[in-house]
Length: 164
Image 1 (spheres, rainbow, N blue to C red):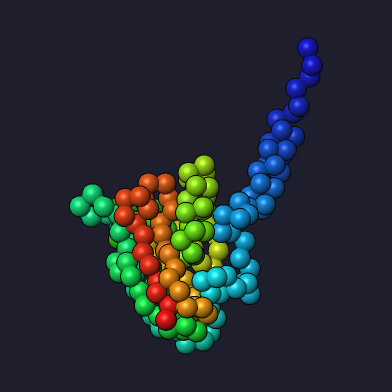
Image 2 (image 1 turned 120 degrees about the vertical axis):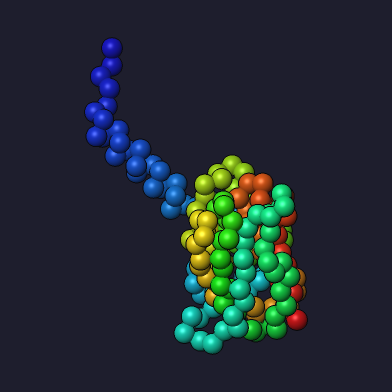
């Protein structure tokens, strides 16, 4: 019979492998935007500069999941501070991206529903918690924000930013 690896070494190996996977991130699924990177839908804002405050609440009501408001209009070049509040009973998140990127990312989330976001364009909140995203919209167009926790977008938790 072959000797087994000692438990401390096995635990260290498992930790090392899981850390490597976490650091690699899901790549093209919308992660990995550095603080200076500009995406099709804009770039991370500068918290030291003035920003228009937009409050968004997340939650469940009457069998639907929703953002209030679910449509926002901004001017090209405008910096916005999204003040987020999860009024629901479940975890929710707001991921700001193009519709195509969010739909792709939703597929990744189906495979890994506990994926945590540490990106300037996304924030996940536990029930009754608050958070914020500071974002500058540098290009005109229509962009998506969705809760990509499996089943939430499908239950109505999606919205649109129109940049004019």
